[in-house]
Image 1 (cartoon, rainbow, N blue to C red):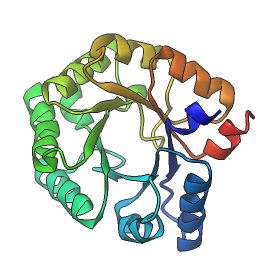
Image 2: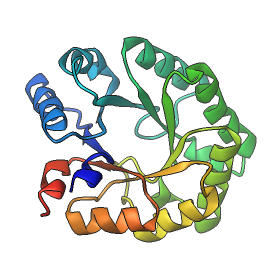
Image 3: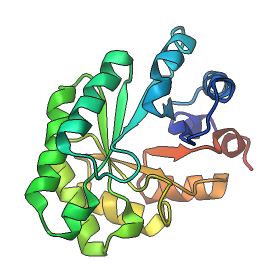
Length: 216
């Protein structure tokens, strides 16, 4: 399962996450050679110290989990996160604006973060597939491509549903080789992990990484 390990963002985004639980997350990520951890911004500096002698990347979430922060706030959050040591930025789109067909606002929102990051970190765009129609999913992927993000990501894991094979396949069909796809939310066992990868995901956001690579 080593190849799957290198695709895993070992995730802990619960609001009650303690320092002990974050420390355990980082240790598991190092021990199992996961690609990254994914934590809330408050924990970045602590994780940076814990992971300083490892190759594990630090991902954090921006505009999370609703995506309804202003563009200015998301931009500040992203810059602050990078300055504190984040390597990857997982930002939530403005879902309401997408529903309103205000595509210029959605695109500006993503572009502002991408521009602020300025290649200092990867940008993953969380489109929250469970709240979107198929047409909206396609548009969100296209806007992410136009904004020069690095990934499209299915879900926050905090809404009404997580990643599905169908959504990952659809997203991959839209972005092709221009962006990568991250499946997140509900990837809890090796079967679902393999199914997401076969559908086109190159990164998996999960809190079940240890279980997955043990083949459970």
